[in-house]
Amino acid sequence: MAKAHKISGVKPLCSYRENARIILPQKVEEVYTWEPFIRDAARREELHNMRISIKRLRYTMELFRVAYGSPKRDSREVTVGDDKRFVEFLGVIVDLQEILGDIHDADVVLEVLTDYMRQSERGTAAPGIAPLIAQMKEARDGDYEKFLETWEQLSAADFKRKLLSFLLAEPIQS
Image 1 (cartoon, rainbow, N blue to C red):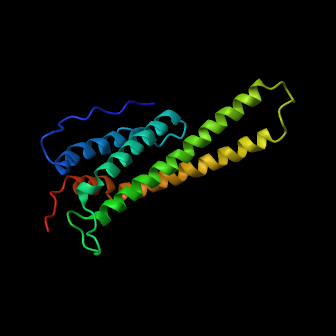
Image 2: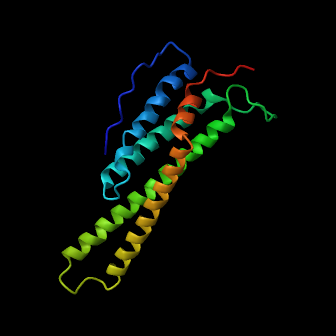
Image 3: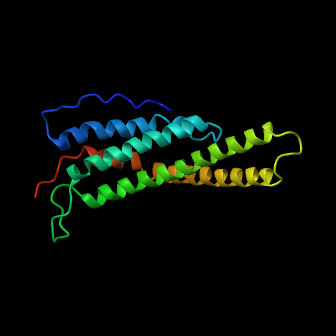
């Protein structure tokens, strides 16, 4: 598993929002360092590392959510920023993490089943193992295609630029 990129520029004496504006874009960039590898389904480790980077971005976004606004009590108004947009961006990140998690789960199961088949004496492996491997490969391929399709749609919609623009925006004061 890849180590998290070192965060630079944090200012302990500045506001929570200001530090969110420093940290979150670096977490976004960490995710995109894995983009060159995603079009090769065999790059299992890199896909897993992207999932881990997305997971780090997700949890960091959740930590800083309050800095991007939260609804006032008994009102649909937002105090600072736009919580609805933040939740939409976060939802996309969660979806990506889940798809990549499904791919990784399939990779682990396939590795275990394949190792079991290799270690079994010829003809003694349970008869259901080969069909199970085929079924897992099919599920993994489907999840991988879903991930690529989602990624391409996000790229076409300029998701990265929109997310960074939102994260870097000055807070809206009410």
